[in-house]
Length: 492
Image 1 (cartoon, rainbow, N blue to C red):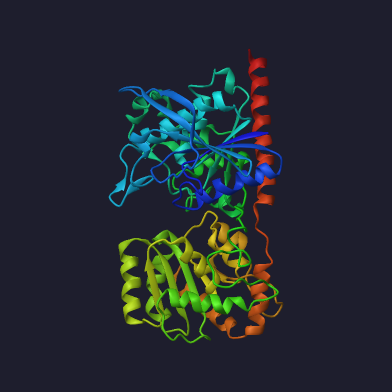
Image 2: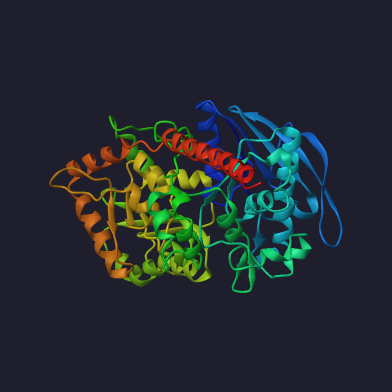
């Protein structure tokens, strides 16, 4: 089957989060399983193409004020996947992908509407797929357009659509007059279509019009159908529950494994753990921790500093946490209050707390390899990748039991020697502190701890199993379109 991905980011070309990792890795696994895959992403200023070639010279995209003309470049084939880039510099040649520290770009609706239309038009020239697989609100107009303005286009009559929610918290909300600006019909501003408390909701449009909906973990597919996690769209998802499924993200072990990692000072494996101590020393040196006690456990953090990631809980207990027998190393940036909290604690406890306010891929790898534990106390987490990376590195996750964190981590039981980490349920600082203390206590028994490490390192979350599950969903999407065409003929 030919599957066309439409997404706003993809490694190695552009990235702000885990979406890019999925769009970079899943297509390769699908090709390995025998499918044909094309990937469409915008060409940003950050996109580096060594052998770019124009394959569609001009695509006309109508807007209410004037036409815009974009082109499509190819970045060639990588691991059998064809990559295409929608090129329109006025929209995509910018400092960042979605906005700056001042906020989102005010014309994001126009930017990603142009992208969505360009994907559809380009596919007529480069190959119409059997299924469009769209990701998050930035490509949500693809299923909307296919079932509205392109509904009578014979090129797309049998094409199915699958839409993946990576984070319900980002929905693409815009004022009502966005519809005529994008030349979309006013009747989409209805409660059963794209209207959301008086605004136009791109994500809702995809939830209404896509043939099938997936999320990036099994538990998250259920959580988003509740008021706590649905962000106002839980009713839409419950109405479509028969088409909603959770498929856990995989990881690329060619990049994230202590046996292959190019960023770490020593390789190690479940059979030979000796290299991890060297990685730990290198990590502490990188963070400027001088003369550390090698027997102290290191807790690593790589994250966006935000309340959603549980940093409000960390703030509640940070003073008490700093007095425990451990070292914390944190990499990330985000909300100013949490950046300042880490800077203040580092100044107060220079041998216990170390932080780098930035994102650095090489340092992130060093944290995974050199830490003994990895902290992810998220309020909600659709999937999460770092806890899966951590397992492979023998860096035991401390997580809250939500979304993909709950799906991927089994609680450690020293009596049976089973489990892969530590987790808590109540969203409270006290529950987090108790769980950290539980992990610190377990660390003192190094023989038992090595069993725990090997449990995690022997887990396999590669993309192959997830790709098989996606292939089943694609087939169901194709079948649903065939059934819809049969029904239309019967009604006629």
